[in-house]
Length: 447
Image 1 (cartoon, rainbow, N blue to C red):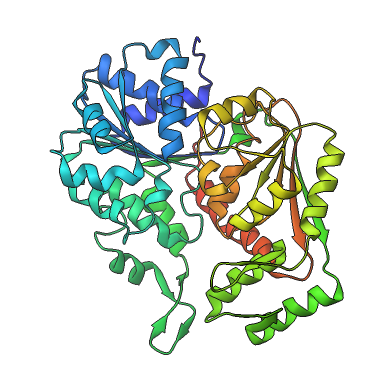
Image 2: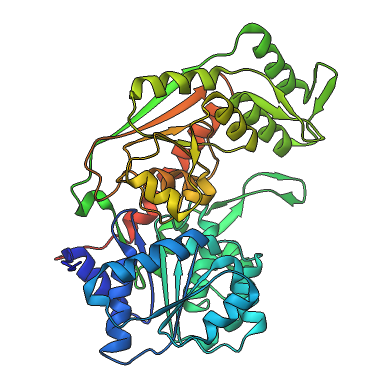
């Protein structure tokens, strides 16, 4: 296919060419993969500035999106790639194969750094936000080899999905601490102050006055941001809230457990040892079932299943993409809807986009990043919510993106008066802070 880039795509590719260290905070659907590949082609095959590129991506993005984009566009001819996935023997064989690009899933980064001689001069980190923890093994591995890399390109749609503290590891892998400091403790002390604490134990931090603007200013020279609504004729999006309500008996179980952190369900006593366990179990109860300590599924209600059935009936054969969170959600949905099919493989993605799956089930953590699903449908149902703004936005963007021909409906099934409402509010609150970051470094094309 012939590539006719939009102005913003040309701008972003030029930004990569001009900045050896850069981060493209591109909204979902703006085509960050083809933008990056276009710049890499010029650097490798026209300017001869780079020789060996490592692309790090979520597994399914590595195996599906990057290879398909390379094959799709005519102008990328000659930019060879090797897919470093599979067994150890398969990965080693892929690394020994001559190519310009070596595409690896992020779970194998530590293995690569610890077992192979490092000879990559350029690194592309797709979904840079997956390196937001400075304690993760993948971050520690990349930190070790970062001084050996000449060019680093970070790609993300959600740079600080939960907190501005998440920015430090990501920026460190770009500039080795030049802008936000060499150590996370120094960054935290400079820009944040303790928020929630219990005597000496600090549970969270909040930005100091003026810190957000200063952070944005410090990283603005190597970061550009673009929102899809600024550059694309995006389809209309409708957010729909579908409230369900438990009956008095079900409500008493939920309220008793929330108050006492212990409740008896038949012959099983359910308890929560701490606030985190309580939050998890309350969300499970809101969805309709909860795990016991020995991982048995204890049913509470079927209100969300009934609401989903109403949505399926109203869709009248049109495809629905249903996001679930817990395994017992998946099991109960499949029991109610035997024809429902999980989106797990490349074949599943193809069948969905061809309209062959009327009811598709996805987990946000596995289908949230980089997959193009907009051709298969225009409706998402959130059966169970997630605390992660990143996964929430990314999954929604599988359908609400460039190329979508229809109005996109995003349905949220929420059990009234439960922890569901807290999660929804938290997602909306976090979005405010992320919007500030995006706006602060948004590209201004043509002035």
